[in-house]
Length: 178
Image 1 (tube, rainbow, N blue to C red):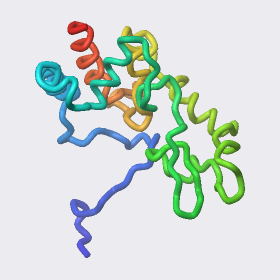
Image 2: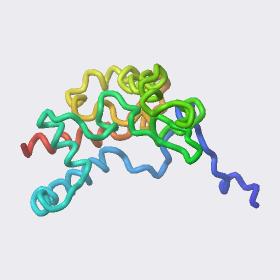
Image 3: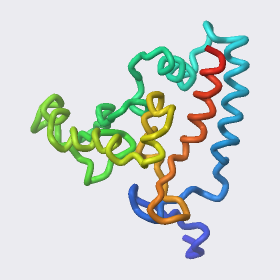
Image 4: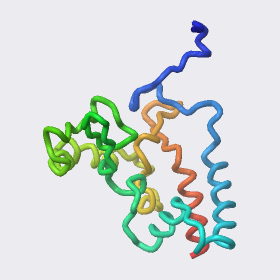
């Protein structure tokens, strides 16, 4: 085994201040442009033949339908992760001890889902939005995205959602086409 730090996988728990984007991460504006180009092709060629989840969810938001994905919902925490030992977590992105709801061998899924802990987890998605996010004209469509995708920026205190510019780009494109 190598002791060279470049070969060591350094894991960072969510919420830690060291959670940052990798240097090779595609800029969100560039990813947004890519999505817009793909969206244009999809609308012309495939709209009734090929299902693209992100595009269908975006279109649903513009027609005032409730989001079918937790990522685009106002609150979250009901897309459970169930481990083989019966441990139940609010979300497959948060399978960490502090997010354990309980075990289905001891409590029903309904009881765990309705627990104060589960409700607090889901409401935290809405309650931890930045002021910019709260004022955004497109909030109805993404509700801040997945909390797992919120990263500390280089400036302290400011959180950035890596999908934000992506979402605005694709939702703006959608609006122009409806």
